[in-house]
Length: 409
Image (cartoon, rainbow, N blue to C red):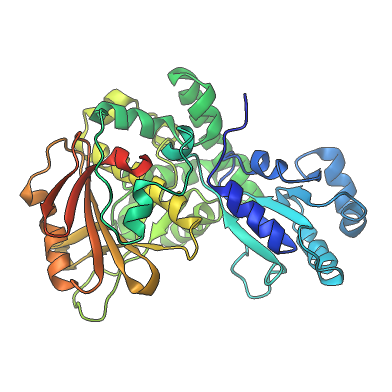
């Protein structure tokens, strides 16, 4: 099938045009290699056994005298490759030498990581709805919101069933674009099988796949929520230490992400716990085996799927903006006030977002947004209540209700 343009295309091209090396980091099978190959002049695919043997023997020689930019695909297969890239870039720091892809976070945040100051990271997640629909222009509804402006009005014909279908379709390009519902179900189940066996073994050997699957299941059942660690490791029937190791492993595999709490100085008695999210809502199918019918008939699961879906759209968009807005959540003690998403933009301005799986939001649905605007009128640029109905309308001063589909309008 023809290449589907990605939001990351321009960002990667810009990085390669300005720096010696770019590193595209994201979950496995999100299209990193396909996108990088469009910009590369030559390729070194470390998943190919012949190339892997040659690079392992002498990474410096294997990466020399090739047309540039050189795509080095899945660096984590031979981590020593990064040291060779470091040395080659130090010797000749010209622009556009390497494009490196990887499906693990690994030691990217370590002070001794060889890529520091040499490889510019570009995050890349699954397909967003904007990308699926071919709408990747800079002039879009979400851009207005993140810039602190009142967005233009939109109307949507999508129903709750449509949103659930799009969420469970996933953002992984192959199931999203090429497979029917049965094919997607098999693909996503296989993805999770490989994740808890081969992928986990490659990042952190010695993990028990069955126990890791139980822990991942507990996380999925609590995606988009705040849950204490005890609940998760007791549900998975593992120890606290094992749970912490699994938490790091799933974060390194870029499958589970934690959304930190927003903690302003002027508010006391806030929950400091992070919210855990599956990075792709299609993983609900792969992990739990659920269908659209299952989600539509389970209120708790429905809310988690829709919230995870919306957050996946925003995460992919925000990660590529410059400067990148930071995503948080807010919850006071005992949950008296709770805002699903706090997006902190430049100069500490805020966009507050609530997500509701309802087609007819009422005043009570916006009570937490009204509270936040009263407390932080000087910081909250705009508050948005995203819903599954057709209309965009003003709920209160500075609070707009809009269809979730506005995110890709």
